[in-house]
Image: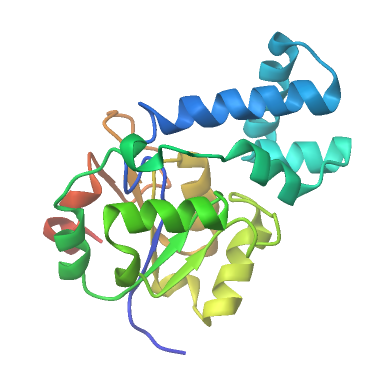
Length: 213
C-alpha cells in the first residue's frame, strides 16, 4: 500500500452549494415518493424522511430496512433533474484548487452515481478525481455506517491514516476520525467538534491550510 496522502471529498455542500436549489428539489421528490409508496400524507412523509435521515444518515436506508423499498427504484424516482446545470451553485476556482492539492482525490458520497457524475461534470472536475464512490458502490450502506468506510478503504487499498476526509457533516467526520483519518469540516459555523482537525469556510481554503493537517 502507498503512504501517499489521499483526499476523500464529500460532494453536496462540500464541493458545491446544494442548499439553494438541489436539496429543496430532492426533499420534495423524496416526500412525494414516500407519500405514494407508504400511503401517508405530506406531513407524515416529511416526518419519516427526517427521522430516517437523522437515525441512519440517509432516508434510503430506513425505507429499505423498515418498508422493503427497492433502493434503485427510490434513487431513480427521487433524483430526477431536468434542469441540473441551472441548479448547481459552485465556485469557479474549485478546479484550480483541486489541481494544486497534492495527493490522490476520491469522491465519497451518499448520493447516487448518475447524479454525482453529472454534478462533477457540470463543475468541470470529474477528471481530477481518481475514483468516485457513491451509494450504489457502497452497496447502499451510507456514511456514517462503518461498512461504507471499510468498503471504500478496502476497494482503494488504503489505510485510514493516509486519508483526509473533507465533509460538511460532523457525524460523518466523527466516524472517519474513529477510524484514524484526518478530518476537515466545511462549515461557516463557529462550533468545531473535538473530532474535527480543521474547520474551513470553503474547500477553496485547503491548499493554504496544509500545514495544519
